[in-house]
Length: 125
Image (cartoon, rainbow, N blue to C red; front, side):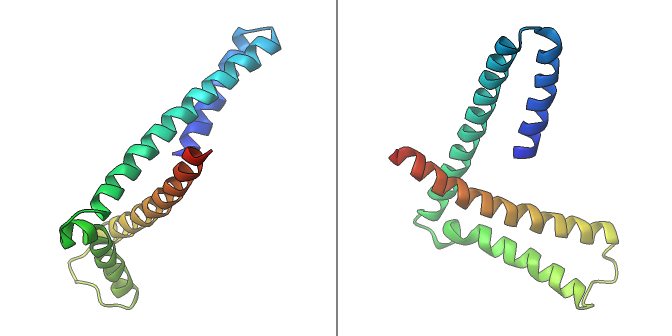
């Protein structure tokens, strides 16, 4: 998501540079847009963190553990494929889709944990 924000910011920045001949005003406007984009990203991360926190603090064992179980299942399928234990009717596209799920899931976990720590630090200051 951070790459998308950088791309959007870059495109808007180029348009602002063309529209505003005054560099001070253009830089002020670009900084304001960057601030708003970052605030939007922070809200999204906060909501994702609250969902994960609610699931982790749930009363049901399944509610707390369904994400790790799903990720272990997908990782096991990818490892089994690499070891040559693949169903004969599983296409290369399906295998790549499984790998993509693992990449997104692990990336989401890492980003979620990082966001959780960043939000705690941000709220303390």
